[in-house]
Image 1 (tube, rainbow, N blue to C red):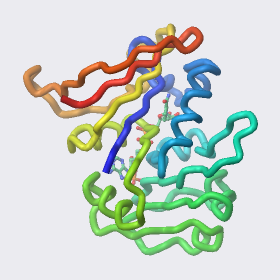
Image 2: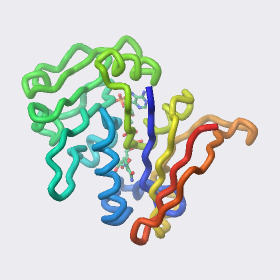
Image 3: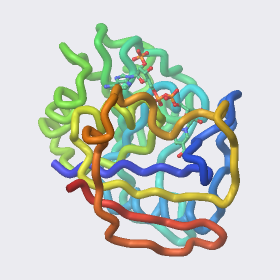
Length: 209
Ligand SMILES: NC(=O)c1ccc[n+]([C@@H]2O[C@H](COP(=O)([O-])OP(=O)(O)OC[C@H]3O[C@@H](n4cnc5c(N)ncnc54)[C@H](OP(=O)(O)O)[C@@H]3O)[C@@H](O)[C@H]2O)c1
């Protein structure tokens, strides 16, 4: 399995304001690069917090692109995703999976969403369920809680970090929620393998060491 975590943050590592507004922190060049990266993965994954706040489509939107779209995966323990969300209403065109802990919601199933009931929600169980469905190359697009849970489980191979030259402040939402670390010696270490300017933003790529 390969897991890439993508973040689009302010200089101070925030992915949204305190009210949840995140569109758009980064500029059009960074967003186009994100779409290019989506096209190169088998699955794009978000948490239900992101699905509810942003109502994203998570497809590949690039001029002239008519290739395949990655499967969309939502981690949604209580199946709060609405059958009228953009993800659900396009589920017949692009494979859409909801990984949950409860019995399948029939409105989602009727919309064409593949509802997968897991016994456990830990990242390792999530990846096993995806691998069992042939999805081995995962692009995580947030939010902060999903990012933290996969980092804590040490299941992130690569970080792609788009950083916009703006400051949001401490009340904004952290790109990575609590990791539960007390000692600096326990901080997760990465090696930078690429830095590229993206319009006014910077894109940095890191691999886990
Ligand atoms: N700038 C960016 O790059 C960017 C990208 C994405 C999101 N955002 C912003 O981030 C905010 C949402 O982030 P968030 O942290 O609130 O929500 P999130 O990480 O998208 O979703 C977290 C929720 O997912 C569910 N979940 C199920 N399995 C999980 C697991 N293994 N690990 C973690 N969560 C799991 C939990 O809800 P249940 O208990 O109900 O299952 C959890 O509360 C929004 O404001 C959005 O706009 C910004």
